[in-house]
Amino acid sequence: MSPGTSPGLSPLSPGMSPLSPGMSPSRRGPPPPPPGTGSAGSRSSRPCGRCGNWGSPPGPPPAGPLPRLAVQELLFWRDVKKSAVAFGASLVLLLSLATLSAVTVVAHVALALLSVTISLRVYKAVVQALQKSEEGHPFKAYLDLDVTLSPETFQAHAAVVAQHLNRGLQLLIHLFLVEDLVDSLELALTMWLMTYVGAVFNGITLLILADILAFTLPPLYEKYEVQINHYMSLIRHQTKDLMAKIQAKLPGLAKKKPE
Image 1 (cartoon, rainbow, N blue to C red):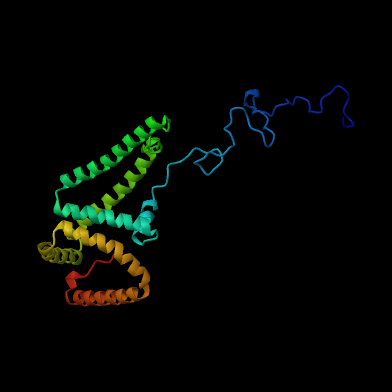
Image 2: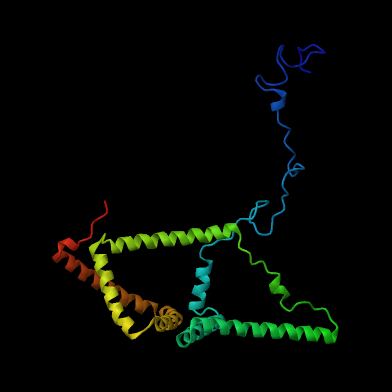
């Protein structure tokens, strides 16, 4: 008790309520909990398995560069076994499509897969019956895998596909409606050259060549990157100079500068 205050009187000034003016008792919040403790209704502070923050709900898996990195590792032969299997399987599939119809290829692949799985299933069942063991289904680990597609993952991939489709549509409108005459002429020249390519090769043959080049060119480029970049820069500069000369002689072909 401070000096000057009589006993039995509160240290508050006369007429002053214990609450601040304008604050009702219902608006007074509960006292803050002591550090290190949480309320009974608060979320647990243990981290969940799939989220990085403490107690935050798991978010959708990133749908960004993961598939692209996996394809890049295959094409650059980071893992020789995986790249060899992918290259051999894709090449055999394309060669089969070149000699047989697509329906026949799909039917034979399905029959081969079913023959392997059914044989293994029957073999395991006979072994378990003879040994009187209960090992369970041979593909139990694969049957328990969660292969469902969550709505968040589907929406993320759909957004990426929609973005690529919009860009493709804008490019088609740009080329076929002759927004830029030079670009449309380049497309026309490319399509004219493709008529001669189509007269020699069919679609499956081009896919086989593309598959072979996709698995052979990236390692070669990685090995001779400096030399290839040097020659590519020379070709690019010569092409730019040639196009600049053509546009200078034909002013109507000059590209419009963006405003």
